[in-house]
Length: 168
Length: 437
Image (tube, chains in turn purple, yellow):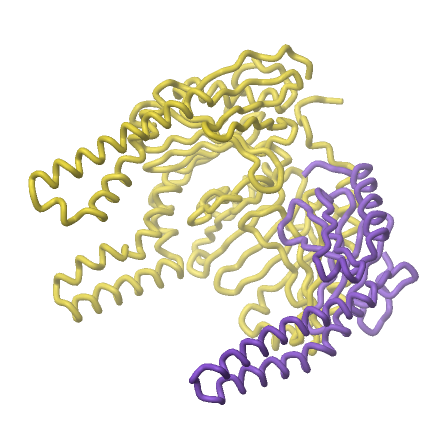
């Protein structure tokens, strides 16, 4: 277990095999953000057409733009903070800027590996690998992987899980 | 296991009747809720009664079909198969090698008739259980013995494993312990406030509405009635827990299936040296279980008794010898109240995790049952140089975490924990525990 790197010992799992997510995930998430903000702007425009006082749509539109301005740079930071590492006996997934977490999942504990892709992710050629153990709180997801990498990862995890499978 | 497949078995023909009778109170209440206007005239009353009868007959018909479909048998591989479902046919295979618990449940109505239900839980995510209801008491007992015997890998007709009573909780202690909890005190205050405010606002008739809202203290009573007459017995197929006032329950916890045990010590119990033990067994307590009584291993007992029981459910574990450490001084600014209680450590067999100031909780976790290790850090923790380590367990009442340790401490705890878990997994042999290899 080599989690060293003295500055931020517990979370900076910097090492040769620490794999980042695809940078395309940043674009995909930003497209979703623009869609969300766009929906809010449309709502604001619709409200502007009703007899409601003008400050109401103004507040909604300001909120939409402000939200976009704040979240836009955060998306980049969060996606860059996200990474995973396949070690000898377990998979490590880490993420987060403000609230950080690092999950160590032994291969023998994997019950299920899901590979999913939403419509926006698909247009960017991205998939999410989600790991499930018998604990509901394990929650280890690796989004933003190219489909072939995701499929290989899933098969590797399944094979290692089979080898090292233990009872509950 | 290669025994010839057994023939299909059915539950007792009285099942539809018991099911309908259990539902009748709800039907009557419903009828009174929808049709209070109807009850004013004699014809109206007759109509309501007629409706109830028609409804009951329809219900009986449906339950009869359900009874006809329900069958269970042991297949060639020695696993239990259950067939059910009137409209949607369902056949479920329960792998007995992954058996978690076998319960015998006696709901009030069934109990009056002398019948019981058998609930089988196997490990698995989501719905992994089967309820076989209802069987005559003796049939339920022998079915449970058969399932346990098959699961343990001995011959299925080996008969009931001999049982040895360990301890029972005196009613006086249970009652006193429930009264001496902060939740009870708070609930009592809430009840008083509701009663007084209702009487002040709407006179003595206000007392009536109090009953409609339900007196919060009933929560305490329901816990009392569920944990009433709690007895524990030991048998080769595991610990047998029996309890309940209105609905008695009997659970068996097979050895080696316990993921974690928690010592719970509310503030007012500590002077008496009382402890409650909670337990997490994979596959158990995944349903809505009101007061968490399904996870109770021992409602209340002196510490020494609890420790003896603990030694039986987690053999070889010795929490007292685990080297404990406390978080660094910065923790006082993260948790000004509970910092004094926060402590933890890990040895080659178990992890010990303590937290809570008013109610002190000490979780003891079996390395071989931990699903994953998780480090978390919020902004305030980061500012103070703290990190929490969580041990993810199968769903249950126990949450295991070393809260707010120093970053270096947390890192070291997590690292050693992962190493211990790896060794524990490699040497785990709890499946078919009675079969020597």
